[in-house]
Image 1 (tube, rainbow, N blue to C red):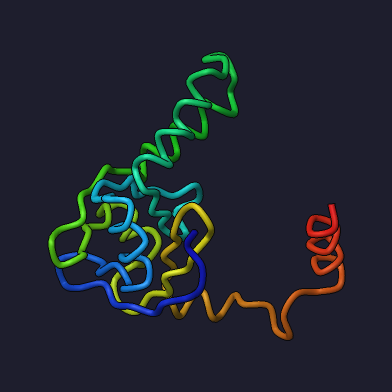
Image 2 (cartoon, rainbow, N blue to C red; image 1 turned 90 degrees about the vertical axis):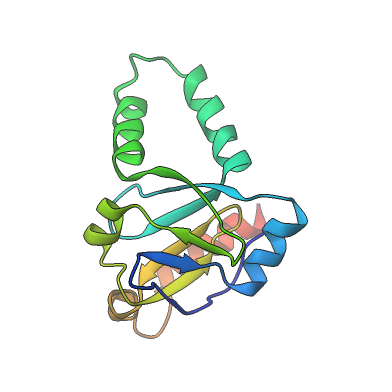
Length: 147
């Protein structure tokens, strides 16, 4: 389970070094292959390949005539590439996604449960809600947690 924020830098070759806390988790499961993608071009999602394959399996069971599934696959495959983490814990982020999401310097590497998100740090901080969650969002999360 990936959690927390681990600030990092993207190197001049477009590689992200996996934060130590996250690397320990993937090493424990012998995962070196990842699918790096995005659903919006604003940040990268890094999925351990076994977790991404579970998503693909569910999508292949959906009708090929489902426009939402087709559009989702178009977006994630446009931004996405399968990558391998090297011995130093680095992985290359897809060039199209690096450019679109401005993943070229300081980044926030955020745990999101089954995957990791990588955000341009400046843009992420700029869009953080002042004062935290608003009442409506807080109530929605409380509903989910109490279910």
